[in-house]
Length: 493
Image (cartoon, rainbow, N blue to C red; front, side, top):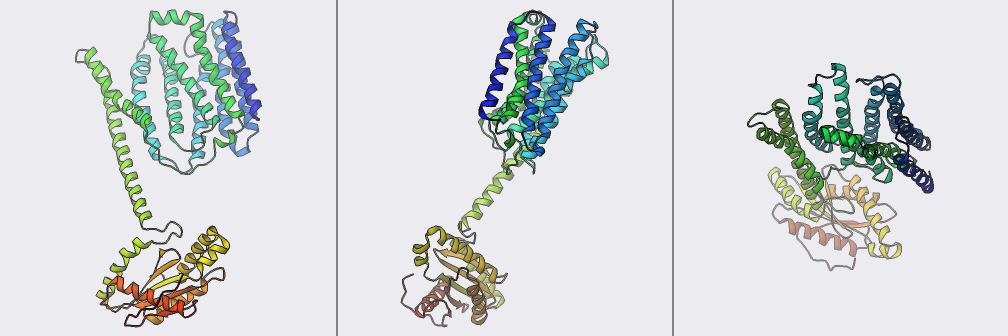
């Protein structure tokens, strides 16, 4: 939808939600208004999904189904209480309300999978850490009191416990979405805001329920309970705004895997989640005068969090090691051609000479220089010159033997290490490379066969002198150095 279209939808949604505070104090009015806003949210999702490519619609359909089921539960609930006189739990509306969690969970899982096809184990560990800490609080203050209650039957207790469990599911998937990669345009944040609104509304009702008499008075205050209802109404339409946005198709776009960064906010959340169990233990010891009411749950949570922290530390160490390896590799690799650079060459040549001395084998070094490269750069520009260097080095690498080493020495000059090759074989190998040079270009090369006594610098110097001799002889040729080094006046390159 155009930028103006989704903004009009958002303006209508804001006006309708704000009007909820002004309707008559009647359960049917409230139920009807909530249903209308919910239907507005579902309509926005379906219209937005229809504008997307077919393969991108399924997550949005899941969101529409979950919200649609939840919205349908609103009139069913008022009918059960006002008409059928069914006030016990569970009621016919509870399955509809609860469908929100698995449906939206499936939609979020599909989005996460599409955004990161290869998975992201680091983000998963962070999500499990945060969810475990929050889950312990939910168990101690919400789930466990419900399951231990005697005022409703087992089925009712199970249904009542399903709501906070569903919230934990949404929290885990929302956190996973935030910790992952992919596009973070406006639709991404509308989805996140909708999920946050659902969680905020549920938390508000839990807090009010735990306040006893004060909570009952707040719940009976019209503007208070309607304000909390408005949080859920906003959650309905925020999904619709995200679906109608022009960039909704980017939400499910695949993204290259990137390590989950551990910034200050993330570190604070992980720290807080890890301290939930020991903090709760200390609180219960203080309030119970040395007695712990939820020892089993706290022990399980502490153990789980400890293992997750160990896994996260192992991931960080592995990531640091991989980054160090990449930095070390980059320090030995030429950025333009991808070949080993001069530093790598200076490390490898002495080792190769030592191996040749031990085995009593011949070894040759060649220095290659693209002919008239400066004129080519001046005529075609530096980007074309860079392309020539990359294409030429790739062609030469393919022409050399597997045991040979080709490195960029600097500028348009390259060096080749040819183990086991005498002057004749080295010349044959370089002739293949010369014929493979792309774009009708040529190179001049000098070869030096190691005499098993000179240093690596002396060997390279002889090859360089042979290169100068090849240039002096007219370029586009390969010349071998004499056994006794001799000086050749350098030519301009």
